Length: 160
Image 1 (cartoon, one colour):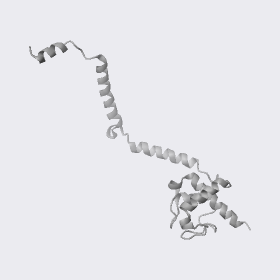
Image 2 (tube, one colour; image 1 turned 135 degrees about the vertical axis):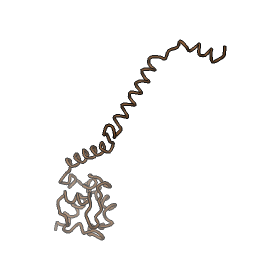
Image 3 (cartoon, one colour; image 1 turned 90 degrees about the horizontal axis):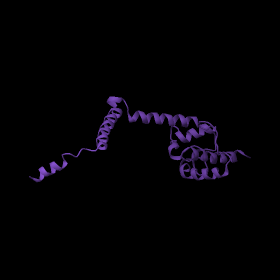
Image 4 (cartoon, helix red, strand yellow; image 1 turned 30 degrees about the vertical axis):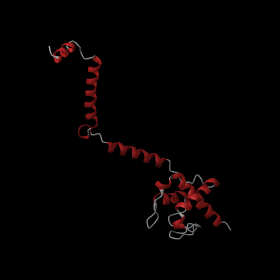
């Protein structure tokens, strides 16, 4: 009797454990489900649709939390922080004293309006003709702090 015949005789009565069979067929069923559920040609599912819905939900939430007035307007700590942010990001165009070098004078009448929400939009989204958008770079709170600083200088200028 050869070695392979002896091995066949030893394994002839050993059955595959039931757990392995259940696991094997469950794995096949899961694979079929996955292919059917996540193949766009079959199910219509698309990761781009999911992403678009998430982005729309975030935009709605952001639009609902838009603040029209500066929450840091008279906060000395925020004004000091805003001065530093202004020096880093804004003074290159608007000058260290807000009088304007490349950009307009921020202590004078503002072209697009004097209200907090309009000034915020000017910084966050930019304006045609040279003002770049800083919304992604600075974020909501830092923009409001810059506006606190600018408004504090404008208020000081307005006082006799």
